[in-house]
Length: 322
Ligand SMILES: [Zn+2]
Image (tube, rainbow, N blue to C red; front, side, top):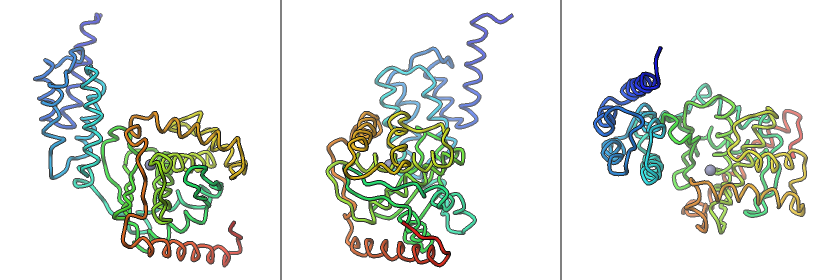
């Protein structure tokens, strides 16, 4: 029967094969650096040698390569190497490397099915809150408006394969009105991500400016959580579980109002979790400016139009929007 050494060798071989399947050259560099054993600690220097050819690729990298990078988190990394790998992962996204290689524009109704369902009434009807920090009021009709803006191609939606690297769900860029949904998530997770990114689109199109970037994140996480929990109250996969559950439940109970102390407290709990998250901790104290574009006045007007259009449609269907 296999002793520990056999088992380790088996795990090493399995890891290598999987790595090789995702990126052969990277697998070879990993083998050179570690002797092919998972127990060998990878230093920051060794990590650079392994990942640099990928993270510096100008023409873009594939989802499989993203998967290979994320596999490295399973190996033994020095503290600095782990921090570096997280930073490299952020850089691949920031430099649009996955986008360059696999972006697929979602234009046809068929392609936008999940996105439109995510912003449909079944999902967003309970999103009704005023943010204590950005002071924006989020309502279901705004999500309907974003749907219309996408349909009118004023916001471009893309699906991109990043191999689930760092589990990033999506991204919205206000300067070019681009909304990305990263692929590979279960449908309920993907819908939550769509609501989160659409919340950023609302903030942009409302020309929001606020003191802290993380305020917009807290708002977006709460909106996403409300959508996810509206559909399935046992939903698993909230980023900041307890904090988001608290806040989302108040929203769903109609208690997320300007004057409510409980709501402010619950909101602060979410904000605290966002600030402590390594993804956002670097943004503490930085301003958000969604009105950074010359066309910002048009944006606000277009959002109102789309919102109006949506309300009209709702009325025509005999449902009264709130
Ligand atoms: Zn966000």
